[in-house]
Image (cartoon, rainbow, N blue to C red; front, side):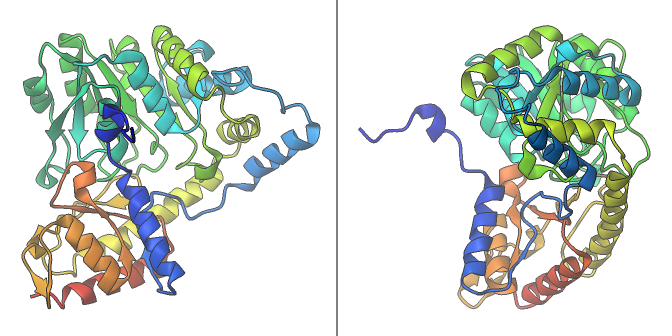
Length: 397
């Protein structure tokens, strides 16, 4: 009787978490590993956010269950932020606060999708998009951007992938894992296709603050897109609050209500104290976030220049987030003794074993020729990791 459900057997363990666990195994054996596998800021949560959470504990008013969708003042603050910064007229009724953006996406998928529905996923994609679609017994349809086009999917590609079963589209900008950022013009072209075919679009903006382009473009702000767009965001990346687990959607009320119903049956509300910290983040001083972004910008350039020094590695120039997604297929077929690099999985295990650098295979993100590395690490660790990679790869022939 030891049989898991078909829907669970249809999905894999998160590749990012699996590689992070493998890196910890090596560290527990006393091996010095530079871990570039997790997308987690290496900064501490800004002090004013921590102070707000401490104050909430001391006040003793936040130990009861919060409303499932989140505290009213936090939802109003999120809506006000989107109205002023992103030019999207959300209200509190459009907001559902969840236990991280991952739960936000899962809520939406469960609320909207039926078996047999199709969801277009822009690839490379964040690992959970594909798995969450399959968890609902809908069908992922992968549309792939190439490194020569900065990994960005075109409106023409989207239109060619649409069928009578297509229900929705999901993408991220800035993108995890590529760091690519869609311009307003590119989003407008995709929006025209979405409107033409009467589809929904899930726009993941979790990295919106870590954007080096100087342009902030939200899909929901475009003409005719408010009622078709589910915006996903959260506090983990821009405010260094990964462990606080606060994400949210901003969506048409009927979708927000459906997501609220799902969440009410699965987890109920997000942690009360975390929400008080999130409120301080969204209404408070943005300067700590700006300082983090300045550091990411510097690290991006350091890693890009060092990657260019490694023979055969091909990388785009990311315009946001804190990742590189280099093509390493040059090394497929090369050997070190009995070790043969057949694919990106082999590449990552070789790099962990030989170079003591932890990366994530690109297959989990929809491109088997690539690997993801996070530059949310100190400059010292990044320089050391690039040195180790170059030296380890030089042993292959």
